[in-house]
Length: 163
Image 1 (cartoon, rainbow, N blue to C red):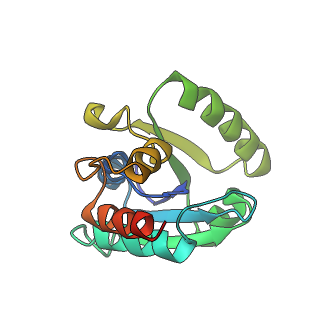
Image 2 (spheres, rainbow, N blue to C red):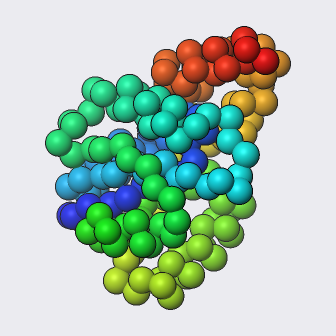
Image 3 (cartoon, rainbow, N blue to C red):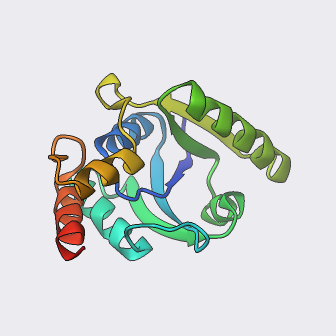
């Protein structure tokens, strides 16, 4: 595949599963925008700016001409159209993810018929990881350093030291 894909998510915090999807996406697309979604109706542990900073640090070793970190508010298809994307990239861990993603893909296709949805499975080592679980175990002092990039591990440690 060629062109630009947008990989959206809350990334609250980013995990190694997210980075696995980024690496696979870079193997398929010329360029990839990792887009942090800002949803004021959803309670997030980290601000959009903090999530962008964690991702930028975590992705610093990738080809910076091919991967970019950004944030957006509003409809994903509107953002993707504004960036000139040809595809939305999403990661899957299992059947429950698929049910939700399938519904979203159909609705996005309704809104923007030319925008394709592409799904990739994260590496098998990260199938059980979610940002929600990582936050929960980090809040209780468990070691999460093998599950998240170093930038996220530091940010989680700092965030829960303040609580």
